[in-house]
Image 1: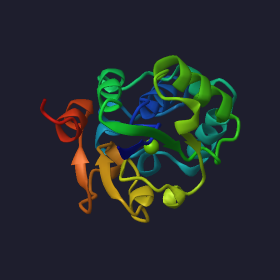
Image 2: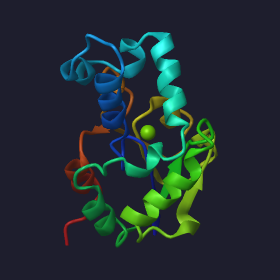
Image 3: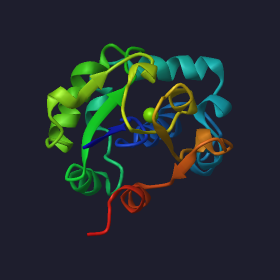
Length: 177
Ligand SMILES: [Mg+2]
């Protein structure tokens, strides 16, 4: 079976949506929800706000209640019939996220065994046939075929084949039977 590796934040999990909600509700800002559809957090937030957000992200519990992206559960379940599915999440930046992320995966994607979950730093260490990720920095050094999952922060990227949602992942990866 071919190996298909999935990123977690902004591929399986709607992490940015939670961050945007925090900024709009708890930060003093004139930004609107629409602003975040057209630009990444790094482009929109002051470095001090980014620092504050970083701290929030490293608080235990932050990653425990993030919403699953629409269609991800159903599609991953189908994909697992055709591929060895792995999850690789570069979470060393947020060491307090390990437990939350592991529990989150167990809760929503129980069909992915712990043996197929990789908590990593650089994803260049991942050997897989495919990697679906929202960050070009993870796809550039990847040796297999990298697929970019669309997000506001990668809208100008042109080097990779794109998917915009899980319906498109299904279309691309699930063979007609
Ligand atoms: Mg990601």
